[in-house]
Structure formats: C-alpha cells, structure tokens
Length: 151
Image 1 (tube, rainbow, N blue to C red):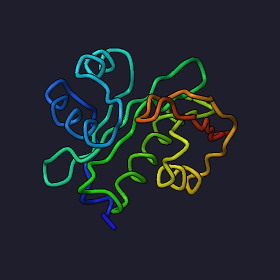
Image 2 (cartoon, rainbow, N blue to C red):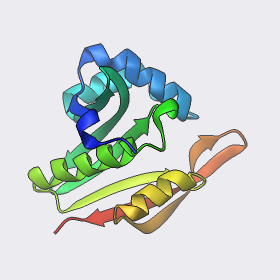
Image 3 (cartoon, rainbow, N blue to C red):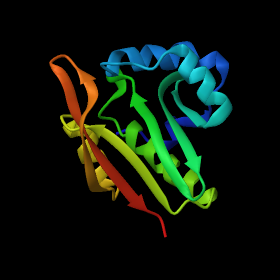
C-alpha cells in the first residue's frame, strides 16, 4: 500500500493534460480527449495524484447545486492496487464536503468489478442502472449508477 505521505494531491493544470490523457488511454475503452480535459479545467474540479513527481492518477468532479458528480477518476495501471484510487476517492469526498455537497454521484461500467468494490468500500450504494450506456467492443455496456450521501 502507498502511504498517503508519498502521494501528493494538487489541482490539475494544463501542463498535466498529456500525462492524464496517457493514463486515460490505458484505462478507458472510449477515452476522453485532451480538449475535454482542457475544457474541464475551466468548468470542474480537476486534481491529480503525484508519486515521485509523476502524475499517477486524477479525478474530475462537477458540482451542481448541492450535488457532486464524479465524472472521471483513474489510476495509472502500473500504479494500481496500491491504494492510490482510495486516496483520490477520499479527496473527492473531502472536496465535496468542503463545497457543501450532500451527495456524490458516479457511474461506472457494470463489468468494472474492481472499481465497484472500491466504491462499495467507500460507502457508495447502487441506486440505478443505465442500459446500453457505454460504448463497448460488442456494442454497448450498462452503467451502474452509485451514490454516497454525505450528510
């Protein structure tokens, strides 16, 4: 496990977009574009996790009134299973509480069992299913909708 002291969390900058996109390309079937990340810097809360001065993960959160929507979160595949995802997710929760959100929503591919387990361990609950939501190799894949109440 990575100690939280060895991970530095900070706001994402334009200079991080190439590193973030490199991670995104490795973990997503339909990855976000550099422009989408660039636009997100202007509209959403975007943070990166660094280990030894290298970007190893990130998240993007949208705030709407009293809700937080986790739009994207990922960890470099070579750095997975070390607790970095949990450090990022804990920070999402801290940021949401600081911004007075009462719920965090997210969605994930129904086949992403590792992410589902992480979210469940963090207290998220399944609240719905979006049929045929994500593009997949064989057509479309369902999205599991999850929520975490913060109050």
